[in-house]
Length: 114
Image 1: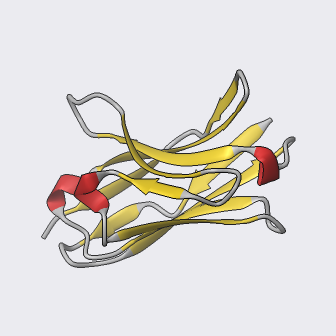
Image 2: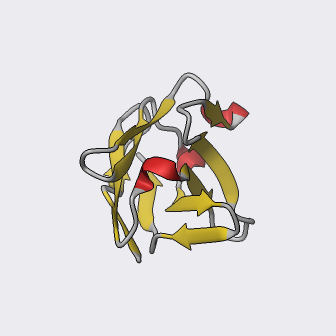
């Protein structure tokens, strides 16, 4: 099982990025999928979650700016990030959870700086 995250990079405040997380070895269809982030010196925090039934939940800090989505056919979960802020700088991780099983991607670095 592997989750391969990509799409991170350097953006100026107000910019956009789209993160992707492609799964192999599992079908994401039945999983609850999430994006988490960890900034330097801080704990990992949940950013956005899309449940297997399609419902979504967002951290207050990203509501209205980030959108999580899944493409079942491509076995991929996305995080569209708009109007980026310096506080969004972190390593972003994708996660897939089903029953007692949790899988993590390797992380992709997002840096927001002028």
